[in-house]
Image 1: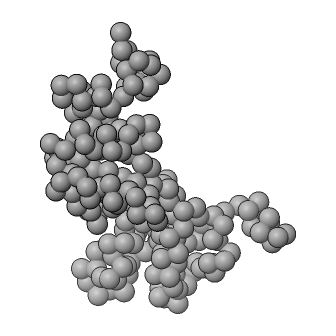
Image 2: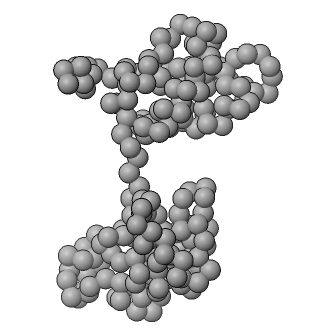
Image 3: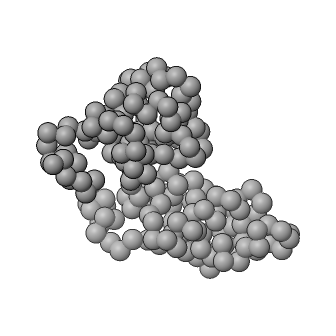
Amino acid sequence: MLSTFRQETQAPNRNLEDAILHLAGHCDGAATRDKKGFNGVDYRFGHQLANQIEAKQPLSRLEAQKALKMVQKYKNTQLSHIKLPKWDEIAHQYKEKQIEKKIDLIEGEIALFSPFDPTGETQKKAREISESYFNKEDKSWRFPLEESTKVVEIFPYPEYRLSKVIEYYLLSQEGLLERYLDWSSDQDYSHLGYSCY
């Protein structure tokens, strides 16, 4: 208990992030076998992490765990000057990535983002909408535009937040936004910047 308290009150150990940035900074995209930077297998993930760190976006617990495992192979060569931490020393610094419940418009399709539902209810509702499919790349459920009405009725606001793009799309559809939101209350759509009067 005391050791956990000490870990949480100490300054964060940034050696993992330093190691990732060091490798990315010496990398030529694995174009040559110069033993500098990420190898061909790690190149893509390594640079994705480096870009995230440079943008001051924290690594999730899973990303940090995978990254620490990945950089171990460089510890005796390129990273010999950086003391890589053990996972239990830094695990408290990383949080699980929370997936926000939202509806967006991506690549001409309605995209539904939702955390994994262990009950299977979200998946079941999504499959009821015609031509739905799960996009493995961004982990969203996708639906054709013509199913907008059904999507917003089955996955209602405020439980599912609307992106600005989908808000404008709904506004362009006759009566669709009115059915989605409770127009009797200003509060329901003050976030849109519109008034119901």
